[in-house]
Each structure stands twice: as structure tokens, then as C-alpha cells.
Amino acid sequence: MREKTVAPLIPQPVAANITDFVVEQAEKPANPPLFATRDAQGVWQDITAREFREDVSRIAKGLIAEGIGPGDRVGILARTCYEWSLVDFAIWFAGAVSVPIYETSSPTQIAWNLGDSAAVAAFGETAHHEDAIRQAVESEGLDAVRHVWQLTPASLDALRAAGAKVSDDELEARRSAATLDSLATIIYTSGTLGKPKGCELTHGNFVALSENSAAALSEVVQQPGARTIMFLPLAHVFARFISVLSVAAGCKVAHTPDIKNLLADLQSFEPTFILAVPRVFERVYNSALTKAEDGGKGKIFHRAADTAIAWSKAHADNGRPSLGLRLQHAAFDLLVYRKLRAAMGGHIRYAVSGGGPLGERLGHFFHGIGLTVLEGYGLTETTAPITVNTPGLIKIGTVGAPLPGNAVRIADDGEILAKGVCVMRGYHNLPQLHAQTFTDGWFRTGDIGELDGDGYLRITGRKKDIIVTAGGKNVAPAHLEDQIRADAVVSQVVVVGDNRPFIGALVTLDADALPGWLERNGQPAGLSIVEASTHPAVLAHVQSVIDRANASVSKAEAIKSFRVVPTDFTEDSGHLTPSLKVKRAQVMEDFGQYVEEIYSAPKPTTV
Image (cartoon, rainbow, N blue to C red; front, side, top):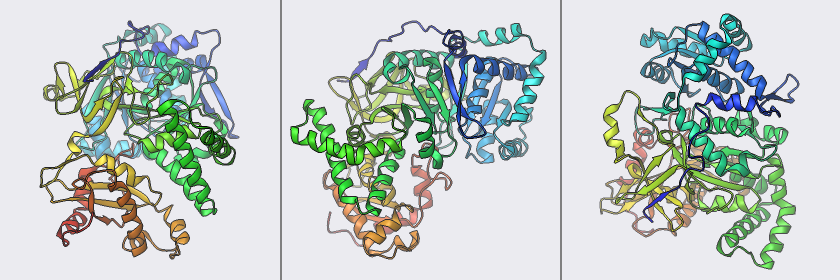
């Protein structure tokens, strides 16, 4: 199949703009809770739709009183928190446009987002964030930025007080003025391929996609008691879309700003679904494996994992595992799976995965333990999801079929093209890119993939990441990288070899998993990452992991040599995006010496 179009379930959007979702929920007799926050004692307290609408309205009035006009851009620099969503909707109620900024951004990056978008004001979560904004404004001479507010109670109370003189009629005129064609937000790409580009997403993008997604995923987001906890950065389009979708669906959302507290927050809030990027699922699996091995139960965990994967594959193949497999699965459910589900709160049925391919192994593992992963695919330019697996039909290893209202086409060179309600109206201040990114109305994603007979999409690589060896062999690195990164000791891997005689790899080690592995394998547990990067036992283990991955590809695609880099790739180091994707260009620039070592060494003689 070369093209798949899915008609919208909601042909004509019901809401006129994003703010209508809040109004509709607040007018329901049930007055459903839309958010939950912790009180002083750490107990979750619901915020109903009417309470949310009232507070959003008060802050929106404050923005109007402070001179924020229709269409004005307002930045938001904060961790994932309730106040982020509060001011986001307040900006929309005031008729303005929100500009998310990653909390980890440098002053230069902050200045770029504010300057390129022509922002007139910005919110920072704390005094630290306000200082970062003011430093960016001063260093780049951004005179248009007239206001910088914090998301503290005192600062928000001041805005609420300032808005007391703004009438309800004036606010309603502002709130209702936006149409589906109106600009809602400018979200900047994470910059894996250069300077971030501002994607102009409209109210119509969010409204049509939310209404159709709510219908397609009603079992996930509209069931009684549906709730999720947000821990991905709200500056990222994935979390931002789910935030809007949840309001549209009447699903309760909590927030946790520090992923280190995620386990405790999952157990106390007990979400029914979560959203995460593939690296989070890898860490959950590797953490559980490491804990089991450290406790002397590694063999049991491995058998349980193999059983979960086999059970899931059997369901996918013929819908019914054998009696023996069912009995093994039931036994491991008591011993292992139930404990894993309890660690995640005990009520999670679904996990929505985006931001990159998850891989079949992890998809089958989580499905096998009782957590169904709905893998999807999208970009900032597509308001997040173009495609997604839905509870009605899941194909593990694919990213699903197009959501209602969307379409996917595979170009002659394998590139994935997208069209539909999800696609942005264009790049901000970059009209020259339109011809490069759109062909006959189809958005060129830059990813490579294929459609199966049911119109389900499988991602096989990124067009710009395809490696062409000196011998002319095309290699998609993701297939190898996903398998190698699945090992608990490995943190990151970057496959290299463009215009080189063979394929190589840069590997980093997981600092948390390493000590336990060293101790279990009779090595000094106190070895540093630097020492471990050249230790024979560690290198032998990494080689064995690479050997297993190599078994799944041709000899020409196999990794012939590797180097363990003595430091990890992190967001703080500038080598990962906030959604935990590797910035390949930055890695190649900063660690090029290790690549040169691979190709200056004697030619490998084994595969």
C-alpha cells in the first residue's frame, strides 16, 4: 500500500477554538475535574472545570489589563506543572498566542524563541527562570518584551488583581474572537538538524485533532475515571497536544516536574494511562532488570520477560497462546508482572508512546505484562500524532494507522508524506521553506517508512540519518541502535559510517546500571565511567551486545568496530533533545576523535 486516508469521525469541528473545550466542560452538570494538584500535605486535590475556567478567566483578564493584545506572543519557560497549563489557556482566553520554551534552554536559545516570535511578554516558573529570560532579553536587545511574570502564587495573584477592572464582556470578546484558522501557538523544533524552526499551529489543528482523537481513543481518554500524570516537558508538542486533548475529553491531568519522583507520583495518583517517549520505556525495563539482577533474581526476570514477549507475539500471530504458555504467563503474573504494574500505580491500562520508534521487543514485553502501549508517530509540524495504534486494533512494531482526518503517503524514495487536520500552516518567518517541505499539499516528514496492507505505518529510518557507506550500501541506523540500547549497561549508541568503508558505532554506558553489572560479573564495582570505557570485561560485554544486533542485519550493514565514549550523552551536555533524541550532528562534532579512531585502526577482519 502506498497511501492511506482516514475520513474524520468529526467531519465539522464542534469547538470554534481551543478555549471552547474549557467552556464546554465547565457547563456540564457533572462539572468534571480537569486537573489535580498537591496540597501542603502532599494529597492530590481536584480542580474542577468551573474552578479552572474561573481562574483562567481571572489571569486572562490580568493579561488584558497589562496590555496583552489579540495575537500578541507570550512565552512560557517552566518545568512541567499545573501553572504551565493554567497560563497557556489564559493566554488563549486573552486572544494571544503562546510560545513554549524548554526549561533547560540557554539564554541564547530563550532569546531566539522570544525574538523570532516577536514575543511581548513571558512567564518564568521561578526567579531563576525570570533571570534567564531577562538576561536573554537584555543580551539580545529584545525591547518588545515588556513584561516578565513568574508562576509563583504572588505573581499570579498580582495578575488576577490587575484584571479586576476588565469586564466579562471584554474577556468574552477576546476569547471568542479566535477562529479555527487563527494562530494558537508557535512551537520551536528541538533543533536536532540545526537552528530551531517555529511551527505555526492553529486553533483548528488542535481542535480537529483533539475531537477526532478523543473519538478514536475514547476507551483511553473518555472512560469514567480516566486520568493521566504528565511528566514530559509541556514545551514539547506531544505533551502539549495531550494536555489539550485531555481537556477536550474531560480527562483529569496531574503534573510532576521531576522524573525522579515519578514512581512515587504514579503510586499516589494511580493514573489509568500515561504518555512517554521510547527512552522512558527502555529505562523502566532496564531498571526492573537491574533491580532483579542485583537481588539475585535475574534469571527469573529474564524468563518472565521472555514469557511476556512470547505470550504477546502469540496473541499477535493467531490470537491464542498455547496452554503451556498461558500457564507460564499466569505464574509470572503472580511473581513478576503484578509487581511491575503495582509499581506504576496499579491502574494503568494504556501507555501512549511517541517521539520515536519503540521497537517490537519492548512493545511485546509491556503488552505481555498487562500494559498496552499505543505507539504513535508525529512531529512538531503535525501537532504531534499523524498515526497511532488504537485499542481496537494494535500492531506492535508499527506506529498505527492515520488518525481520523489524517492521511499518509509513501513517496517513491520511501519518505513518509502527511496531510490532514494535524499539519501546521507553515514555518514562522520562513516562507521559503514551504516549497521544500510541501509537495502538492503533502508535508514531507523527512522520515522513511512503509505501509502494510491495513494502512499501518512502520518507521524504518530518518532520511537525513541514512548512512551511505563508501561501497554504496544504504544503512538505516535505528534498527541496530534500538537493539543495542536495549541492554541495561548501554545508555546511548550512535551508528556511524557515512562515506566510510564499514559501519561503526559510538557507545556510552549507563552510570546507574554499571556498578551492579560490574559486581555481578566479578569486576571492581567502583570503576568510574572513564575507567569502564576501556575495561576489557566491559568491552567484551558491549561486543556481545553488538554481535546479537549484527545477527539481524546483512554483513554489509553490521557494525565492524566500536568505541565506548567515556561520558554519556545527556540533555545537559547538549547531545540529547528534551524528548531524549540524540543530536547526531552535535555528537559527531564533539566526539569525532573516537570516530576517527575507529577508521584509523587496522581494518577489522571479523563481523
